[in-house]
Length: 179
Image (cartoon, rainbow, N blue to C red; front, side, top):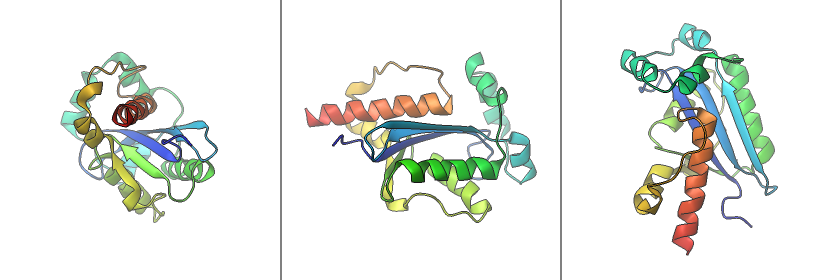
């Protein structure tokens, strides 16, 4: 069995850094219980999120304006989903591909997890993972700085590309530690 089986990496892109900020995109990937790789991507309606009371932050908007064009386009081009459909889709994707005790990772547990939880709780939806299975890639990168020169593939600040690259970093760290 692959040590990453039943593990998920999630990344979000937002319009603020405080809990309750607008989430623009959710990207996730992982190796399911079937041993296969699966990914998920959803672009949420910004206007709906703002209408529901989620906030934006001027310094984050300015930061986005300073990013590469491909990253900025990721925020505004393409189909969007209404917020509830996106959250239900993410929860269903997790349920289809991973068992009930999967581990969920992000690059900084104090950001992605609380932001996503705020969205689920806003709609009285159950958070689709167990809090004790939350894992932090940033901690792993601190333990194994040998991957500092990791070559990023794709568009930085695209939620799915970030999740894919973070999953690969985790794989490299685990291989390095096991060696």
